[in-house]
Image (cartoon, rainbow, N blue to C red):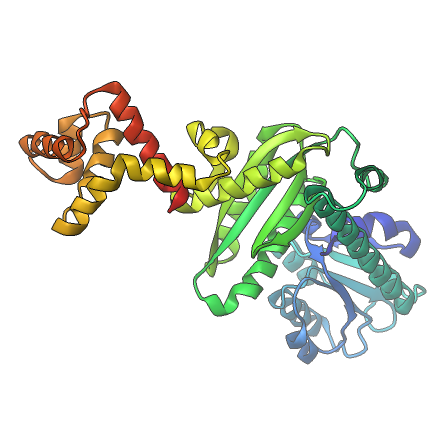
Length: 387
């Protein structure tokens, strides 16, 4: 977890006489730690998402400071603070312009402010912020999994800004890695992207990992805001990296803490459906009949129904090297239109009719009958769930 530059600035500006000179658009950047750096060579050892202080002991001229600033930006520094004094008396216009260009917040503090005091304070705030967020995440997990006393847990959530009757929405995200060796790195990047979007919009959120997925709990009463969060997150991922993509499952919005375990499970189900349907995002509220099927706890019931509907067709395909199942799905998806099916399957319209007759002979169904169509449609929905 990290803390937004804007929050540090808001809480400490007057205390340390901090002045924001440039990079206003980057105030949503996240800070994971704080360093004092005086040498350009040291910047190569930074991890990114740090707030950097400099007093300028090695600053020779304006060009040196500009190059130093560019090095910090290349190291993904979140913000830059210059301690004005005997070594850097003023900030060159070129440095200000560059920070504005790349949206890297640039601050100054006067020489009389001791850097050791500022860095200690900032680090303490970061650690406290992480501690609070970890505690809240642990509590919401206990509520979901029904561990401990619910009343005590609700009181803890209230102390941290979550009202007893608050509205919560779960967003379950799975990472699709281009290269599996970077799985853990990509998960950490995803967490930072989530934080950046949430903190920029000043949303209350909780984040934790569950079964290799990232779960984000948004305190939102309007699904429009949830959709905007998801859209902004997907946009940021596309902009910042090509090393991974994500599938997202979004639950309903539910009020209060009592039944959030159901909401949590629904987000998982929506995420699984997103992966199976090969779409980026699935909203549980839009799953329609799938919601009824997903609510069936005994999956054997679904498997037995599927086998009853399609068992003989699958056996025929297996024994004869055909794809009647694929054809039948296309037929149902196109509402039984021979023309649309022939175009999609690259076959003659007469072949469509012949294949329907073959399926009817194998199954004993009348595919033109509405009830039989519904049985087959439900069967394919079950296939999406159990495969």
